[in-house]
Length: 319
Image (cartoon, rainbow, N blue to C red; front, side):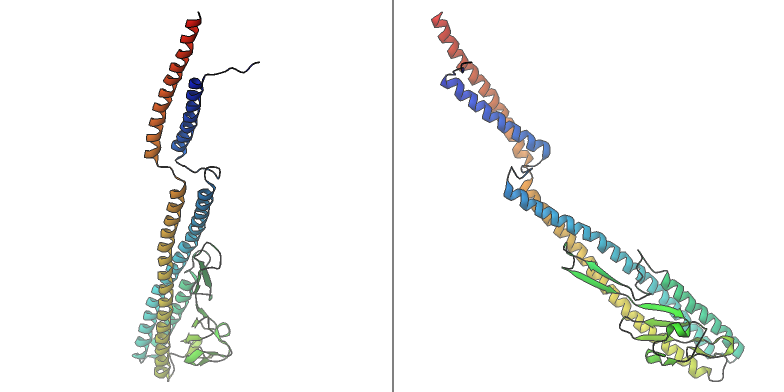
């Protein structure tokens, strides 16, 4: 079949309409998706740069979950520490009551209350876990990741071990730190503060069965009770001081993590905004383009019609 020949005017208008139609399609697509760069075909440089920014933002967003969990773990530990401080204060009050009491049986009764407080501290420490991590019992540690690449930027949150147990469970090489608590096999509970570095602080318990069979036990009903109980008060105060120091460390870690949370959220916003700047379309501009292209298309159709009428005039002359 022979090719149909078009005059110059019709061909020019037809090419113009085809160009306008293509631009209309592009503009409509941008308005529908909101993007001026939807694939690498549109603009390879902007597309891959935006993809890199979005990947980093996604990686940082995933780190936020880990930071939030760490904040909760530290908060759980802090809650336990706060209440344990209250128990230690009660323990000091019980010992002071015993120091001012001359009745041996009443002192022994106070000693039993003292041991109960030790057990309560132990159970509270055990209950201060979150998400399987307990920062105040078991010397657990948690590494918090901040960067999207693992190991690039981290913080190690180191816990400690506050527990109660028998003599054999508490001793390390036969002694507990500077308090000088040593002895043989014991059955009564004593309080132990075991730091990650190996230092141990202990508080002697009341000696059950009116004895002090273990170096961890004090006979509250004995004749030397005043010197022994004064030593227990000193041990409690040492534990309070150490607990305060460890609490301060956890609080400092919490401040670092929350600061990094704020920084990470801001970084995600910056990266996302940068990616959007490279790929998102200006809807106001595209709307104006659509209106202009629709007008241009209408004018093109009219021009094509006029060009066609010229050919028809030639046909009339021939007729």
